[in-house]
Length: 316
Ligand SMILES: Nc1nc2c(ncn2[C@@H]2O[C@H](COP(=O)(O)OP(=O)(O)OP(=O)(O)O)[C@@H](O)[C@H]2O)c(=O)[nH]1
Ligand SMILES: [Mg+2]
Image (tube, rainbow, N blue to C red; front, top):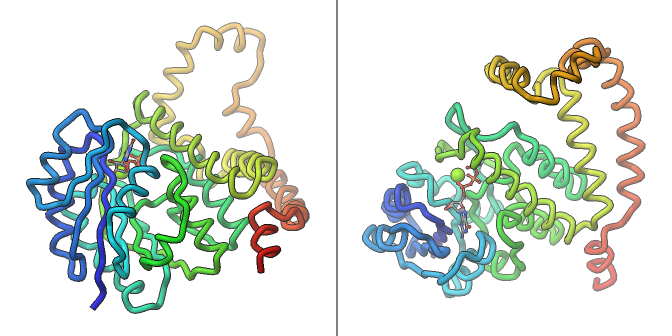
């Protein structure tokens, strides 16, 4: 039998952490659920403890990566870990599906892919950037590169230095893949509470983006990370199939644009809007040019060896 510990980093999640812990305690092989309360100002710690978690309270907010590191340090030496976000609620009971391949030894790390409920989440810029970094650096093609729901072999997680904040996930995947760990993404019917499309939602995602950038840059170097960031933004903007602003947001975006003060002199001068440019430009030909250049650029990129790889190869 596998001895697994579930670690839940939580910040102001009194609303969902209780259900998440209760659900995790029903997963077979999970012998301990640790909630790291990262300086929450609500009752997260009390609710988690009442649901049966071992709670570690941090006096001040230190970010997701640091909180996870505290949880790992307090976990003993289990065979496997489940890393689960506090906002999964009852659906956390499905975490056994994530753990199974690790327990059976068919994967060193599994990552859960699942759909967000409609109406929340961002436009996929940060996710696209993270996916591109992983593809370029490790060859992995992940649908949900930033998913916080993972299972890992115990010795693997304990041997990794965790990235700060929301850089945790991309750092884990990069570091594990560069060590040759086998990683598989599997679909699990989890659900979570995505942050909305209000100001705080965008600020939250901007913070995630900053942390992802930092974690990537410290592992593969700044220039390469900037190149991949630009490439992902360009490809996202040129993608006619997945427009940056889904159809349902267009009326709102249009109404908003009409109200922006700088839009008036702009339109009086007869400068076409970005939307008009996008519909006028032959996107097909731009994409064909991009696909002709892409292999050459990727080849050039591969020839820049990242500091980490160089270090690994000089060690071996
Ligand atoms: N330790 C710690 N955990 C955090 C912090 N902020 C969020 N979390 C936890 O990290 C997990 C994921 O955070 P969410 O806010 O759900 O972020 P997300 O699901 O990646 O992003 P969205 O889909 O945009 O909401 C949850 O368990 C949060 O409680 C923090 O500052 N410190
Ligand atoms: Mg979430």
